[in-house]
Amino acid sequence: MFDLEAVQECLREFQLDGWLLYDFRGSNMPARRVLGLDGRPLGSRRFFYVIPAQGAPRKLVHRIEPSALDDLPGERTVYLRWQELEAGVADLVKGLRGVAMEYAPRASNPYVSRVDGGVIELVRSLGIEIVSSGDLIQRFESVWDDDQWAMHLAAEKVTTAAFDVAFGLIASRTADGGTVRETEVQSAIMDYFHQHGLTTYSPPIVGVGSHSGDPHYEPVAGRDGVIGKGDFVLVDLWAKLARPRAVYSDLTRVGFVGETVPAVYEETFSIVAAARDAAITRVREAYAAGRPIQGYEVDDAARRVIENAGKGNAFIHRTGHNIGQEVHGNGAHMDNLETHEERLVLPRTCFSIEPGIYGPDFGIRSEVNVFVDATGEVHVTGGLQDRVLPILDPDGRSIAMRA
Image: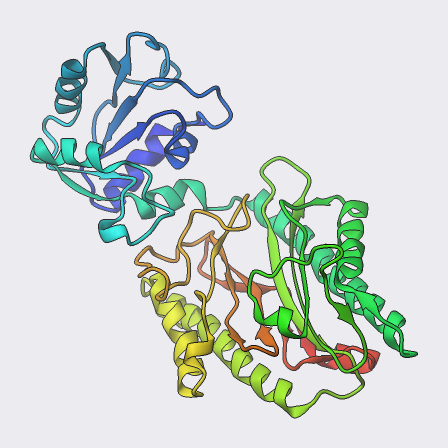
């Protein structure tokens, strides 16, 4: 539901004159969600809706769809011709020095960039400064309420337990020299999710050997790997409660099919774990000091550890992504590689921390979820893996984890 008072309060907090929201046939889904239009039929004509920091909003809609924004407050202007659209936009922004829009400069953030270049040109031609609405979007798109935080914790219990299912199946099938296929482990995880009321948009990653070195590997029946004694295995799983507004838990752990783990895996894992912990520490220190922190800073903290260990070229993705009702949410990512993420790490948002080192023979990633609550306390969910799990040693698997 659209909350005008909350939006205007946020505009004043970020010292913005206004927010110009635009959509054409669902091209700007974040804007539709902010306006409470998510799930409603998509129109076939363009609309604009301006929310000033002070005063009443105004809307611009086409004559074919004059009721498109009737549920929203504000005076309506109806256009037909393209000339009337341009004049209508000029009238909407009259009196404003600048507006926020779903735009990111220099192709810097595809999660935010939803408004096409022509619309940006039109608004700028009116003498209006445009800034990115990235932090506004995440305030209304990515901030969790107490129910969502509780649903994340409930999902985390099941996703964490699913690792026991996965590594337990591998152990039982390989202990006496047998094997198990990646897709069999994947199916066991999915069955466990369904039995415990979880859903997911796609099955988990189960990667053995070289497959673990592909961050987005997808096992396919008939072409999947076979897991046996002496193999290295990565399991990355994500799921949420099968309820409205539920949010994801997204975790990764690695193990070796044996009672002891070779040094090459342990040495690489120790670097990854140190990078993970450095990223978490950076967030905690910023909040403890009352200092704003941007997503790129968190990525820098993790990446510096891996680069100092001489493995920088093997860390080929961002440190983490926002988590919400989609596993890759629309809030700030922990990224200074693929994008220069300048959005703030806001209270009541959740994100993954998942640095990795990847090579031709194996890849190691350690992933946890971080939630900053309303008071600024930083919570880590999913458990911190301290060493590679020795899959054939149940006691060793327990020792390798800490809360």
